[in-house]
Length: 379
Image (cartoon, rainbow, N blue to C red; front, side, top):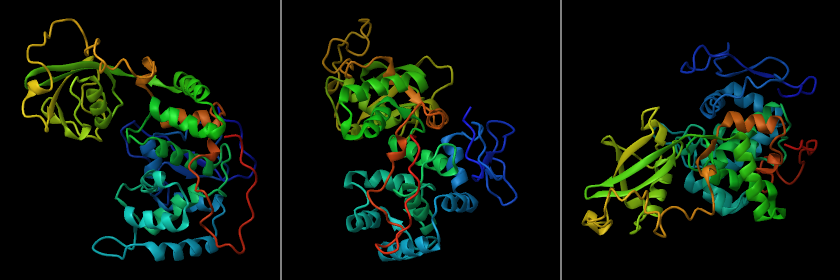
């Protein structure tokens, strides 16, 4: 259980849900999920799924509570509003004035709040509605969450909301869970420049073992001309990751964007998650693969290859999938948001307070800056 919060801190309690598939309950103001009561609830009942947390943040009550605890006052809002107005796209159709991906790039080019390579990830996280554009309210919430002055305190409301932003930032695959590659990237950023690569990987492996779950199936990849390759895959991998694995296993390696996949005649898109495409108890799955760049299937895989040779995935070839940095079953690990937040709240995972931060403050001008908050906890 999470330790008791500081006395007098605002509290958020997640109301129980009748069944896993039910919509989050609403409080009297129409806000779903977390309900403000007066002090932050000191257990893990509020650590619902990534989707539940995102749905809650779409409600105005959630944003107001977060901004209040983060110390964002009316002056901060007006400062950001002026900067928003300078770079936003004009209203049109069903869209109000908004920040697009292009205008966010221009915004960052001027204010340099993040590395250029991180622009897409910051924008993706701030786009809670997944609309491809940011209203001012969404922009304000994201900027406040990324502000270097927003406190990241264990068992606080800001800590919980920031944990969602951090998790989503590193879940670049969009699968809804952190895979081993994403865990390693997160741990590398926690270690910053001081961490040696070996220690980063050792820590990532330890976190994966402690917090992760494994659910894997055998994918039997077939083309019109016959067998292409077989390999084990995590059910939490997306279509993009599956395409990468196929390219790694094939002797003739096309680009991932040249592959069209289907399971049981249902197209398997790049953003689709494998477990949503297959039966729950499946141990092996047939996957049809079409390579648009190839004129003939036998150009990709020898027609006379013995499909009964007992060798899975061309284990003797340099593209067999054995060259994965010496990784074993940890390749198939995935960590849910619930497990991630529990680890942060109980300090099993430390150092996350420095993650998902802008390089500088954007909510005030150079004059009359807010007083810096108390030093954040070891989260």
